[in-house]
Image (tube, rainbow, N blue to C red):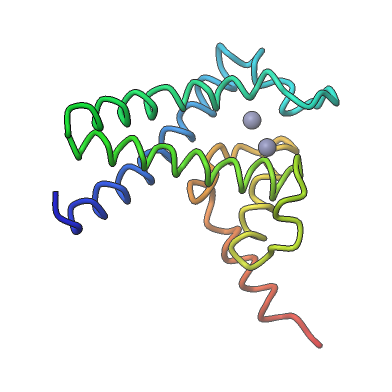
Length: 154
Ligand SMILES: [Zn+2]
Ligand SMILES: [Zn+2]
């Protein structure tokens, strides 16, 4: 597989995973499996949450694709598996460390994009829809963030 195709595969898969995360969050986590998502919205104080099971579920196809791709030399499977893992890592870093501070890893890392993600996602926790995470939420959050920057007086 040449590099253009690898980059295309990884990019498409990465954003497809945002769609999958949005879909799962809206229809499954707030649907028939809401019992597993509840401790994300009403923290129990435990280090591990039932909600973490979703991360495991998303990891399974990634692991299978990486193993199968490596064994059979199928680059497409391998890179799709890697892209799913990359989305999982991005979600973990943004959601669990940046927004919810489960570990202080990204405590001081902040920019416009991160502030937008944080305000969109915190609104989800206070009852608004915003089921997507890295980009699938109303773009008014980006507008508001940039507006605020423009109106900011020193
Ligand atoms: Zn939720
Ligand atoms: Zn959250």
